[in-house]
Image: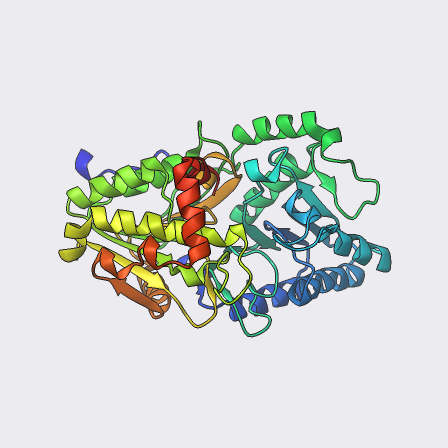
Amino acid sequence: MIANRNPFEHLPTIAQDPNKFEVILSARDFRIRLLDAIKTAKSRIYLIALYLEDDEAGREILTALYEAKQQNPGLDINVCVDWHRAQRGLIGADSSDGNAAMYKSFSEKYEHKVPVYGVPVRGREVFGVLHLKGFIIDNTVIYSGASLNNIYLNHQERYRFDRYHTFDNKDLANSMVEFVQSEMIANSAVNDLTNRDKPSTKEIKADIRQLRASLANSEYQFAHQPTGENEIAVTPLVGVGKRRNKLNQTINHLIAEAKEEVFICTPYFNFPKSIAKEVKKALKRGVKVTIVVGDKTANDFFISPEEDFKTIGGLPYLYEVNLRSFAKAHEAHIASRNLSIHLWKHEENSFHLKGLWIDKRYMLLTGNNLNPRAWKLDLENGILIQDHHQHLVAKFSSEVDNILQHTQLICTYRQLDKVERYPDTVQKLIKKVTRVKADRVLKQIL
C-alpha cells in the first residue's frame, strides 16, 4: 500500500549488521575507544574534525598517531581540520599561530610524517567551516560531533557531552575515506598545515571558491545494497549551502514523515525556518515532539557572571531568548505533553548533542547543529539509519535515558529566564542588537 511505503526508499543504502553497531555513552569512553583504535590500526586512520587542539588531549591523540606511524610507516594516516580554525587562537585569547604550530612541531620531531590538512570551506571562518565528522580506522567508523581537545575527550574533570557511535562496516568506511581523498585532500585549496611553506588564505582565494562549488555537488559514493530483515540500512549524507543540500532535505523529510514521535537534540536553539515549520506541522498532526537542548550555563560560550564579560558570552542568552519565545508560542502543546522540552545541565559540563530519532525507525547521527549556520554555511554530514525491524531500539533507548538523566523538563515557558533577569551586561547587549535589528543577521551565522 502506498501509505506504508518507505519515504526514503529512493536513497541508496549500505547494509549494516546491527550487532556491529555500538552506542558509546560517555566522553571518557569515547576517548579510550578512539585511542585504542589508533594504537591497534593495521591499514588506515582518517580523522576528520573541526579542530585538533593544542592541549593535553590533542597532544595525546597526535602522539598516538605519530607513534603508530613510526611503528608502521605504511599506515595510511590523514587528519583533516578546518583551515581557519587551525590557524588562530581561542576566541578572546591573544593572537597566535593556533593549533598549526603544534602540527609543525610534531612533524619536525618524527621521521615518518602525519599530514594535517586544513580544509577552507569559505574564504573567512565566519562564513563557513569544515563541520564534517568521522573517524575512520581500518574498517570501523567512529562517528561523533565532538572535536579533539580536553573538554570533548573528558581528559580532565570537565567534559562536553556529545553522541558517539561506531560502525564496523568496510563499505561505509571505504565510502567515507574515498570522499575525503577525492573531494578534499586532492583539491588544490586543501593544504598540509605541517608545511612551513603553506600558502596564505589570500593566495588560494580562487581555489577556495572552486572547492566550495565542488563540495556543493559532491556526495558519498557507494554501491547500493538491499537490506534483509536481520540488517539495518545506513546512508552517509553530505551537504553544504542551502541549495541541493541532501542532508538538509533529509532532515526536513524525517520530521515531515513522522507519524508518532520526534526526538531532537540540538546544542544551540536556533532552528532554521524549514525545521521550525516542520516541527509546528508535526505538533498539529498530533506527533509527540521531544526537544533536548543545553541550559544556557551548559553552552560552550557561557561566561560565568563572576568572570569578565566578552561579547561572545551573550550567545547562550540569545539562544535562551529563542527557546523561551518558542516555548511560549507552543505553551498549549507543552501543557498537553505533546511537546516536551528538556534542558540539560550537569555540574560545570557543557552540552553538544545533535541528531534525530523518528518513530523508533529512523535515526540521524550528525554534527549538524540544526541551525541556520549549519543549513547555509558549513560543510556538514550525517549518517541516516533505517531500522524497520527495530534492531536498535534497545540501544537507542539506553542512549536516550543516558541523555535525559541530567535534564529538567520545562512545564511552562515561565521557567525560562526573561531578559530582565539577565546580568546587566547581557541585557545591554541584547537590547543593542535588537534595537539595530542585528539579531536577524546573527541568527543566520550563529
